[in-house]
Each structure stands twice: as structure tokens, then as C-alpha cells.
Image 1 (cartoon, rainbow, N blue to C red):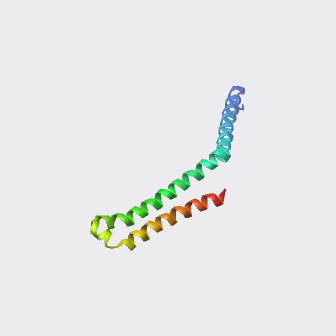
Image 2: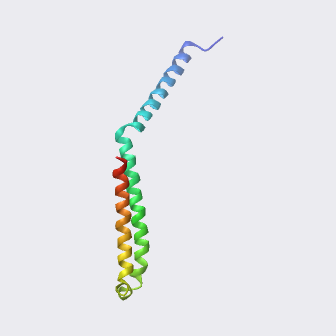
Image 3: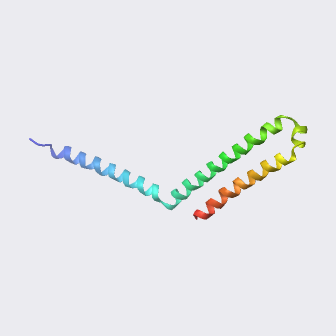
Length: 98
């Protein structure tokens, strides 16, 4: 004796619900808003990473004292220039993709 009609109906209902959830998830993944949000999150993450690297470069100079920093303005200028260049590169990449 095969499965009873009630069991088949429950299995079909379960499969239908699962399929509906899968389709809804796919639609959410490929929606322009979701894609844009993921891209914005990536850019923000990259900017934070670059900022952290810049801080890691400059903070040791600051810890050596004000005189140490003031006696090497070229290094401070290079650090600031690299920071600006890094951020400009990130912004350029973002705009180039859109």
C-alpha cells in the first residue's frame, strides 16, 4: 500500500513552502537594492581597512612625541598624502563600477 493522500498533500505543501522560500531568497539576492547595499558595504569595509592602515602608520610617529613628529614633517606629509591617495583610489573604483 502506497502513501495516503493526506501524507502526499502534506509533502506537497511542505515542498511548495520550501520552493516559495527559496524563490523569495533568490529574488532578494538579485534585487538592485540588495546588490547596491552589498557594494556599499564592501566600499565601507575597504575604506575602514585603509583608514586603519593609515592610523597604524601614523600612531607610532605620534607616540614618539610631538618633537619627533615636528622634526620629520616630510614623513607626516607622506603619510597624509598616502591616506588621501588611498581614499581617492577607493572612491575612483566605486565610481568606475557605476
